[in-house]
Amino acid sequence: MKLQKIFLAVVAVVGGPSAFAFDGTINITGRVTDQTCEVKTGTENLSVQLPEVGAASLNAANKTAGATSFAISLQGCNPGTGNVTAFFEPGSTIVGSRLKNTSTNSPAGNVEIQLLNNNHTPIDLSQNTASGQFSTAVPVTTTDINLNYYAQYYATNAATPGEVKSTVNYTIVYN
Image (cartoon, rainbow, N blue to C red; front, side, top):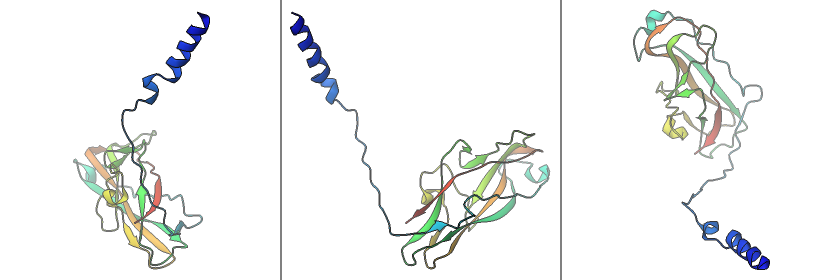
């Protein structure tokens, strides 16, 4: 009897149908390239200082001000190997398509930060691909490349004075 109970317990654990059940399938694809661009040493972490602007310039929803350029500098690229761009990673600082104001020291109200590509088209941080974000794609024609972007204030409603700050991580991608 004791042996029979042990046998039934082993069959239930090893041979039960739930051990082989699945609820879905995940198909994974990818591609490894021979592109070799890397962010220039010492420029991996950028600081973008937006100019001080008056709350009156952001006195209604969808108003923008203070567009400030910045560049991600790449080196060691392999010319003729496609395009390179930055993908802005999802994270806790993203709200919708923009960056939320994370300042804890007298934060400005109703103000977010909007990123723009080199054509001044808003980058949509809610998207899962660099092309979906409208990030700048640059052909790899030389060994050194700059990916040019802008950051600006964005009013979600009439802004109130205060500090604005945020961060976003990026990854260099190729297509």
